[in-house]
Length: 176
Image 1 (tube, helix red, strand yellow):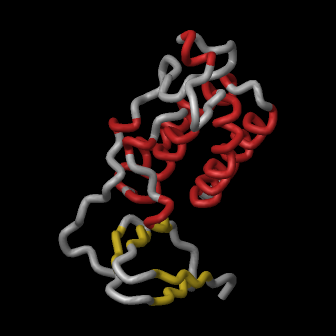
Image 2 (tube, rainbow, N blue to C red; image 1 turned 90 degrees about the vertical axis):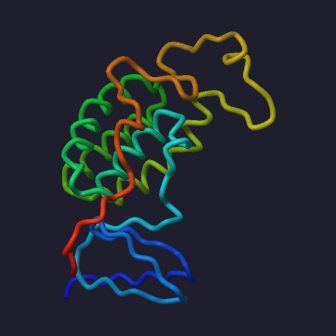
C-alpha cells in the first residue's frame, strides 16, 4: 500500500466520501487505504457563503467531490470561470496559486485544490478591500478598482453557484 490516511470524526460529524454521505454516531477514526475523493463536513461551503470569487470557485470544486454525477458540469464551469478569475486579480500570489490550482484539478487533486483556495481567502479579502468592522471606501462609492472584484460581484460568463447542487443524491442499491 502506498499512503494511508487516518481521519478522526466526532459524534454526528459527516464525511463526503466518493459522493456518499457518511455520518457517525460516536467518535471514530477511519483509515483510508487507497486514493479516494473526500470532503470533511467542516470544509463544506454552503451556497449562501459563496459570496466572493474564490468562494464561488471553491463551491464549484466542492460539487465535484460531493456529487460525482454532476462532476463533469462542475468541471466545465471551473474551466470557464478560472481564466476570468486569473485575469481579474492583480495580486501575483493569487494569480500564481490559481494557475497551480488549475494544474492540481487537471491532475485529479481536487481536495488539494480546495485546500489551496482556502489558503487564498485572506489575500482575497485584502484584494477586495474587505474589513469586518466597517464598509470600505470602495464599496461606499459603489465602484471597484480595475482588476478587482467587490464581494458578491460576478464577471460576465461566471455562473451563479446555485446553478450547481452540492448535496449528493442518494442512489438506490449503491453499497460499497
